[in-house]
Amino acid sequence: MKILLTGSSKGIGFSIAKTLINEGHEIALHYNKNKSSLDTLIKDSKTNSFTIQSDLSDLNQIKDLVNSTIDKLSFPDCIINNAGIAESADISIDFEKWNDLFDRTIDVNLKAPSLIFKELIKYKRANKIKSRLRFINIASRAAFRGEQEDYISYACSKGGMISLTKTMSRSFGETDNIVAISIAPGFVRTEMAQSFIEKHGEDVVRQGITLDRLTEPKDISPLVSLIVSGQMDHSTGSTIDVNGGSFLR
Image (cartoon, rainbow, N blue to C red; front, side, top):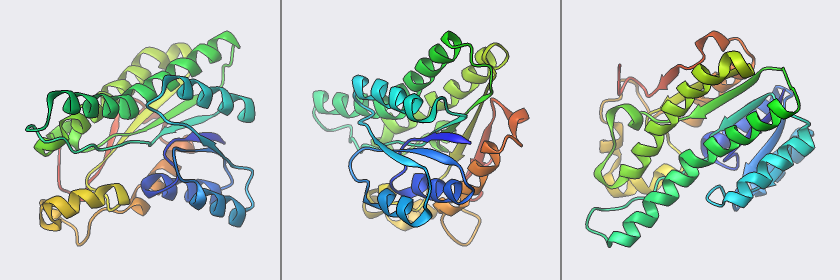
């Protein structure tokens, strides 16, 4: 399979990259700032996968990411929207600063996946590409239960991601051969999560988990692999929870 994976340089994305490369997939490995881990992965794996830099808060760079992916892969079989940020923004901070943090979170977590989808559908239709295109959207438990008060924008962005997935499936499944599935992790032990742990404590993070440890990236990548394989296509439009039993619905 030919795959675009956003946010692949660390955390959940890097675990997904390792799993899929080991399975022989060719991946456009998106990153924003640091690609050293990806360079090492590509070298050690002897894969045809390659890196693409893009700031997903920048509209022009999003368009360049799509164009570069198409140029190098011809056309992808699967898009994994994993890139995301979580900006802590206390209610007490300056109005303009809070607004800027909110906008940046929505831009990266929700608008960028929407624009990537829009541009690929446009290209698919223009070039009469009939093959199936799968979207895997990494959402969050926060979309359903809400989040801590200083992460309003994060919860809103992930709620939007769930709605985006449903719309992809419902409105584009039959007409454009689209499959879209969301994965909603709970708290995952990653670098991005470390600042939250430091601020709120691990007891808060572990609250409600019914297993003996926090969810780790390795718990999510096999599920992504299964979706990529096409064996879960008839779950299109759905959301799969991976939260250690901390939120049951």
